[in-house]
Picture 1 (cartoon, helix red, strand yellow):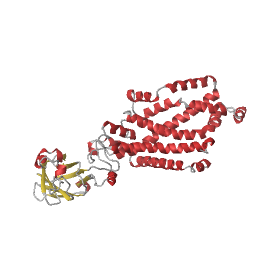
Picture 2: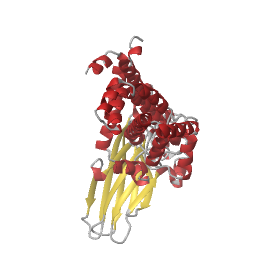
Picture 3: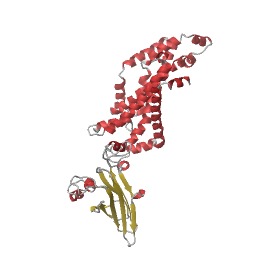
Length: 443
């Protein structure tokens, strides 16, 4: 409690704790609301999962910094009740389906794309489907005549016949353009798209989904594959914290116990530990991890195991050894030996507890080091191929020229979360160092 009170006297520690609380809260919220299986489905699900998302769309909040709003994605689906549907089976052997999609256009720019997905239910003959576009100024534009399959997709801009009828202008622009303005400008107001289906059987049924792909989408935007970046930003938090915490705890505690055993048993044991440490200190840490990821496995658990294995005999062993050499000569250690305490008990109950105050700040400061290490490997293309992480996002952005194409959000959002996480742990770690190290309290 005394250490906690002293810690709260440092404003930097309070800010750091708040940052850590936010990141931990994000990680817990992600695990509760988006389990691992669901996250993998959303991130690797394919076109079926991503078909309602636009490509390379900025986050919706970027509109707050623009004078003219970019359009958001509009999804209207008869199955979800967001569009009107009526069926007429009054004529024997004939089913008429009428679907109406109504939406208001208030944005100052055109959508990226327009798509219509149809879902028809029939026994033998495919239905005949007609699509008509109605503008706010009462113009009626025939879009297409289709023969729908059980599940079909119609991309407006891919219809060469429609493009010719619109005088070579992309449909997503021509259908929403104001005819009274020479420069292509969206005509604001209420639009309606009517889809009629004619079935040559009594029990035919038709549903459809109209998607107007916007230029902004969600809290984090989308990438070149239409994936929602929110998934990777959210799941990057538990992955980063788990990797950083496990690596830091695994290396720090193991190193401390190895140093303690080496000091207590001395002789050949201490000599072997020191020689292994010196050999390990000259090994290139990052190149070895790159070799593991390239030639063996890129699984995050394999990389974590390699990090812990390489970090066990780190340079901190020599620091702990110097401290343990002093502690070993303390009177209470001699008293423990006189009472017949075994070596393992002396190490665990008398030697190690003496340096825990030094261990805690070091452990906290080490966590962001491993968080950045995992992200660095992912940026180099050696991240886990399955898990969506912050480093993987930056790698994808780099490979697809995000900065060159102006998709700054793709890089800045994961980079900001990485820096924020590192800052939070570093601020708390430095404050803990002042609390547990009397020589730094006045600084």
